[in-house]
Picture 1 (cartoon, rainbow, N blue to C red):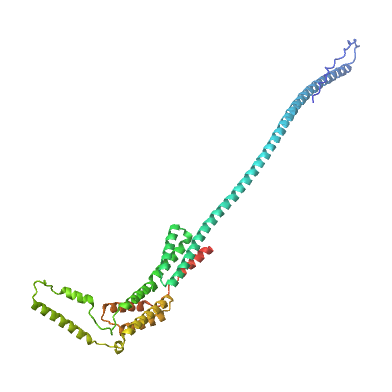
Picture 2 (cartoon, one colour):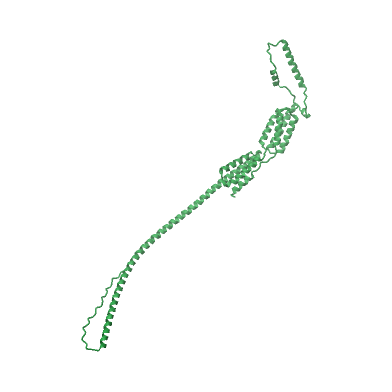
Length: 371
C-alpha cells in the first residue's frame, strides 16, 4: 500500500532585522554580551537549519525505504503466490507419485506372490514327478517279488531291478542317487544268488514223462523187428534169377529155412543177468501199470515243485529213480538219459528263497518321505 508523499516544508525565513539605531556609547561589557547573544542566535539558527536538513534527508530516506519495502512486499507476495502454486503442483505431483508408488508396490508384491507361487508349483511338479517315479519303481519291484515267489525264479526281479537302474540313470536326479545305489546293490546280490529255476525243472520232468513209454523194461524179451529183418535181407547179396540153377536155389532155400528156425529156437530161451529178481516177475500186462505208476510219481513231483514243496518232490523223485533202476534196462541209452535228467532235477530241486530288495525298498521309502 503506497502513501502519497507529504509536502516538505521549506527552510524558515529569517525575519528582517531592522537597522540598529545608533546606540549611545555604552560600556564595553554590554557590547560583548550582545555579541555573545548574536553568536548564540546564529549558532542556534545554524543548528536549527542543520536539524531541518537532517530531518528532510531522513524523511527522504524513509520514503525510499518505504517504497523499497512496498516493492519488496509486492515481489514477496508474487513469489509467495508462485510458491503456493508450485507447492500445490508439488503436492499434486507428490500425490500422483505416491499413488504410482503404491501401485508399483502392489504390482511388485503381486509379482513376488506370483513368483513364489510359480516356484512352489515348479517344486511341487518336480516333487510329484519324483514321487511318481518312486511309486512306479516300488510297485514294479513288489510285482516282481510276487512273480519271483510264484515262479521260483529270480529272473523277473533281476529284470525289474535292471529296468529301474536304467530309468534312474536316464532321469539323472541327484535326489534319487541313493535309490540308484541301492538298486545296483540289490541287483548284484540277486544275480549272485543261486535260485532254483522251476520252469527248467518242470520242462525236464515233462521230457522224462514223455520218454516213459519208450523205455525198455528188463523183463521184455529181445525180438528182431521187421525193419531189422528187412535190413538184413537188403544187405544179402542179390543174384539174378536167370543165373541161379535149381541146385543153388535148393541150397539157398534150405539156408534161409534153417536160419529162421534157429532164430525161433533162440527166442524161446533167453539168458539175462538180473540184479533185482522182482523185475523179471513183471508180466507183460503189468508193464502198462508200471509205466503209468512211474508217470504219476513224476507228475506228483512236478506239482510239488510248482507248489514249492521241495521235500515232497525229493521223495517222489527218489522213488522214480528207484523204479527206473529196478525195472528198466539201464544199459539202454534212453534209460540212461532219463536217469541223468532225474538226477539233475533231484540235485537242483532245493529250497532257495529269492533275496528281497530291502535296501531298494528302504531307499524308496526314505526318498518318498523327503528325508
